[in-house]
Amino acid sequence: MDEAVAYLQRSTREALQDIAPAVRERLAELILTSQRIFIFGAGRSGLIGQTFAVRLVQLGLHVYFVGDMTTPIIAKNDLTLLISNTGTTMSVTKTAQIAKRIGSHVVCITSAADSSLARASDTVVLIKPPADREHERLAPLGTVFEDATLLFCDCLVPELMARLGLTEKDMFNHHAIWV
Image 1 (cartoon, rainbow, N blue to C red):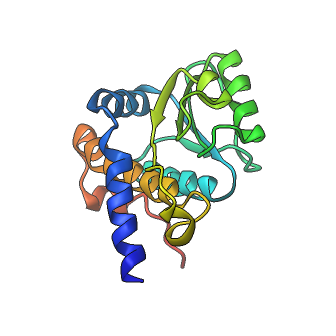
Image 2: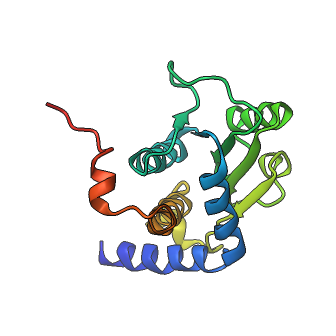
């Protein structure tokens, strides 16, 4: 287990270090200036998207996960944030194409800069895990991409909190409380 932990720490750090500050800034600005935010990903990428959606809701933003029964239709002044390691997941790529046609600003988080998803997006956040054979043994099937994406999204939250002038107590007021 120690070997896997060390590998994931090193690999996620490498995957995140190449994201330009301007890309992070652009995403933060888009999140804060969009009327509504729509997030989507399939499988484990979708779980990462849902986790980020929860944090954005806790910031008091209007966020929806594409595919939920109560999700409204994406509109022109909305932000669509899509997550796919390969950038070829058909449901995610189709969502990008539809959202872009409507006039939504489409952001994708992917490891594939030349993918169909990246080409269908207005803004690309490239999270590129190291290309080595250890991932098959220590972090199979996109684990490094998923972990790095989760960290990337979680690291945006304090920046968004500061820009919105919110504290953790403010966020707690939007926290789901089950009675």
